[in-house]
Length: 502
Image 1: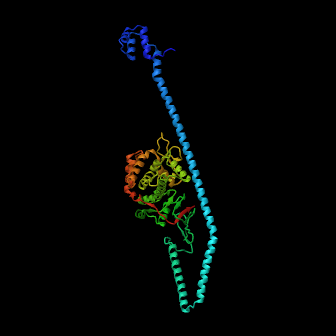
Image 2 (image 1 turned 45 degrees about the vertical axis):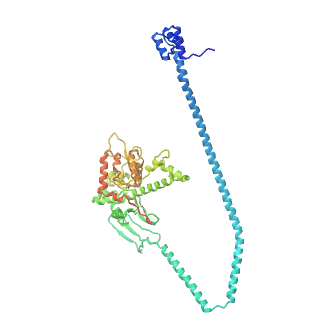
Image 3 (image 1 turned 90 degrees about the horizontal axis):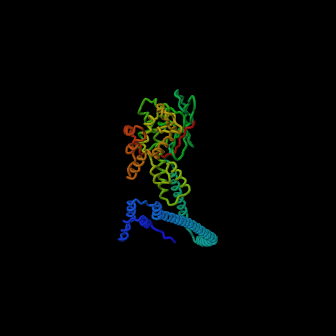
């Protein structure tokens, strides 16, 4: 069998073929030359080294070892995958065995309870016979002793009279306490008029009817055209829902007076009534008083913002509770999947969802609503319920009149005002442009500080093209109109629900 020569041996053989004396002398002196030195001497003597020498050398010393390493890595990967599959099979088998054992244990426990119950029911007749026999003999002995004993009639009358007096007093006290507890002091008494008051006015106003379950006054204000009704029904939470009735500003202001909705009271008590308008009155801009116009705008928008914030905080509380649970139900998992989609969170990242699911300060929301809608008088606010001026390129919207020719954006329109508020809060909580806003809000929450508007306005430079100038305007609106007073405001819990129906 032919001996396999190394690359160095081949070079030496080549030197002997061409009779390179320098290499021969080195070998005679028993000096070991390196492969590189041999190559240099051959090149110096203008001897060409065949390519196959180098190819075999590279193949033997580099290609084959690398291929072996690759095959070893592949084998290692396959072993790991097999180990992983074995582990998962063991886990599945363990889960199956555990659930089977638990079910078997529960079934045995349930059967045990059933046997105990049956045995108890079997004992009841015997126990009843024993108790009945005992009390029968006891009463027989008592009545025999009473019959055989002489009783003083006056003493007997006193005892009987005292017994009935004690029973009567006890009954009266218990009845009084139960009546006191069941009495509802929160309900206001209304005087009922037998006849309806009909007030005719030259100004067109909607007819208002107030109805309650038992007694309620009825007031009709006749109008030449349509007659919407205001119905009051007792429920757990007070809500005033005003659909598209094209109400006039004068009617809205009068409605606020009727329900005692005053901003000074809201600032002091930190409570607002849940009055939800679906649109702004179209003649809001006709008010000559700027202060009254601003107050009317705040009264319309404030309950919508507070309601959405409370809904977000309720969801956040539920999310924290679920994140601390080891096991969740199917309904809880379905709710979690919906929230991950709503807040555009991928891969089920709960920490990212918790970062996004948080309130927007009321002062910022009011200031941006006032700035973007012109205090409820802009064309976008009146025609499309667009309070916050959000842009869209594919949805339904209203084209700006002064839009540049090379732009095709629109202002996103909404069916009702509350939908605009919800979309605005979802925008701040999900869009990448407001990541600094969310991180600053988390930082305040981690430090147990109040989440205020003035602390976060500087993070909203990307909301408008004017950048830092826009944030200065927001700070000015918040400060001048004392909007920070409304940040701790929450919804009132009362017993009425008011609806307007056309």
